[in-house]
Image 1 (spheres, rainbow over the protein chains, first blue to last red):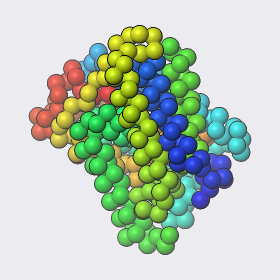
Image 2 (cartoon, helix red, strand yellow):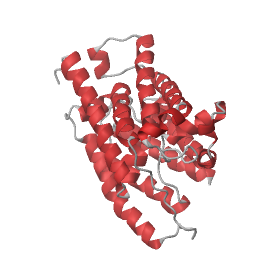
Image 3 (cartoon, each protein chain N blue to C red):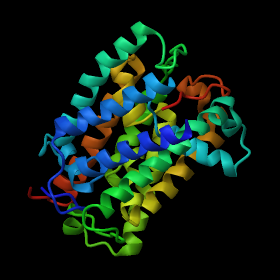
Image 4 (cartoon, rainbow over the protein chains, first blue to last red):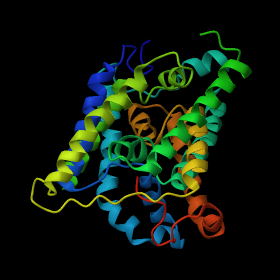
Length: 171
Length: 148
């Protein structure tokens, strides 16, 4: 199955997984940082709100490394586009386009709703796929095992419901 | 150090972009059990990171000789409920937090809406922290739910 961005097959999973591990270990070994991205949402919120939750010292100290890291994520995606098909605005959503022909406004609304669940859920759980799923599991932390099982269950249930029941998807 | 974080983030973002982890179809194929790709990525990442973390902790110091201090995440009911909610969002958007940023960089316009939703979702969580703290047995507000 080709990627939506490059129209080419993805990297082999073993290569991608090893690369992710290398970045995670570099963060720890070079900078004493545990990988984690969803706290970046709090860092961004902390610039525009004075709520006490976003005034915590951990948010203000974490911003110094997490925001440059998140900026790198943008750059990595941008370079990936430039070095393949060239950067261009993309609206393609693959399977969702086949199942539900949403227009631009519909896609933005769909993604906004998904984003609400992501932002609220990751902060309530204290982490996401990176902080709990990769770092936490690798460090044998029980809350990370519970959270990872929970978000996999939530994702599997939702996609199975949407594609098998609502969309009658024929793989 | 800032440059180091930007470079590591760039490497991470490039890998996510080219691996399928930032691709709507691959996320759905994972949750439909139709592709092994994402399970292989996460499994390999954990299998390689775990012994690495163990070795770094045993050494106890960073490359520059500073002590390694890993802040552990707290255990509470939010792990389950927040995890389930995040899973619903991951399925709907086809992105977890890292890939939201990667997809914006790639030019996927709709990822901007996912970011807007995520920031508002996180903002609402921060705003009602004290109201839901007791039921979810969350740590004191000064600590929050943990970095990650």
